[in-house]
Length: 390
Image (cartoon, rainbow, N blue to C red; front, side, top):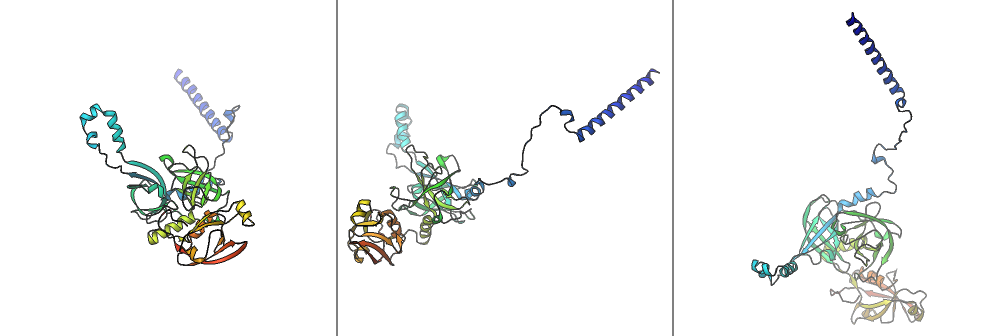
């Protein structure tokens, strides 16, 4: 009798529990917050995929396009043979003169430096700064995919601080060139390189100025100035636009501490391409030359020569038997234009003459005796010595 009663009670309990669970399940489905009355819900906005996110204000696509084409460059230079090497290797001398020998030993270690470069062809050609590789005995390239390859110098142009090197590889990710002539102050740019050897880094800024010269960095200066952070190790790296195209080769910084102070300089991509193509074609760079010494026109000089504007280049001297001498140019003439392009100062004059083709005629506009005169001149080839006058 008791067993039957217990069975009935257990059956009633089981049925009640089952019905209660079913009711709770239904309430949970149709009223999710039924059991959480009084608790505050946190609402989170989330997109299903980052690819659908609004990319306005982001330069990730430009960086992803250009970064594979930027490489790290490691160079080493062998030190001259140390005349004390036999003492450095002698255990007895090391026992008594350890510190002094360590100092001598450190002087015999190879010098290492680092920089950056930009792949400009799928066949392994890489543009960089001349000062990155100028004194190197060995050059090693670290690609974005982790590979490390030895490189050799194809040609250099110290006058613009550019160099072309090559690695033995095919199908490399080459950068796309943009026309640096179309840049404007205020355009957003990205600098890619290997600052301080920490690894590939992208920094962002704007173009602060164009056509910077008289900096005393190179003979031919037409720099893009930017506030994108450029530090030691960035030299030879890429300055790109917001579409990921090359607009300059990072070259130098203005700094009192060795680090970035918001003033960096890049060689325009248009100039870099001209140098690269000449090195590929003939192994060196050929520039026009007329054989004059020039200086900038100051407001005082402009007034004395009765010029309307303080621009142009005053011819201070003419080399004997030079193209300028043969064309009749003389000291005191003011160079105003070359082949229709205005000369703003002696720096722009250097660049305008440099791009002229040797053995071809050009028209030069000068101011002489308060008159404007046009003279035809046969352009010469710039002499090799670095101290040759333009």
